[in-house]
Image (cartoon, rainbow, N blue to C red; front, side, top):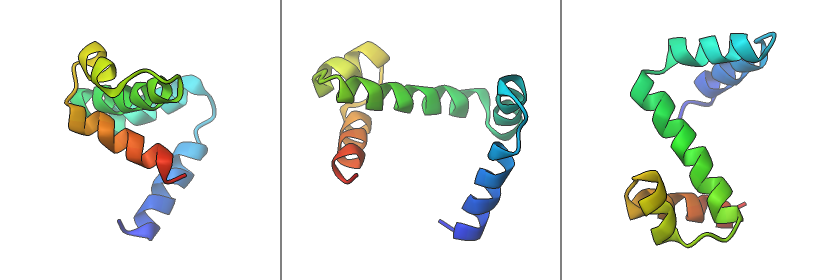
Length: 78
């Protein structure tokens, strides 16, 4: 990923004045499906941190096991 573009995105999001402005910015940047997927990925990380098994997470959130495994690898690399 282009670091300049990522930094611009981060600066843009950090510049939002409050929760409502941040929500609006995310809705402007992402399609409804993309926003839903980002929210699911956050839930995956949270459930993994709680020790919920990967297959249970996939079933609960209606995502593929590969998506959950990706989240697991991301947590392990921290």
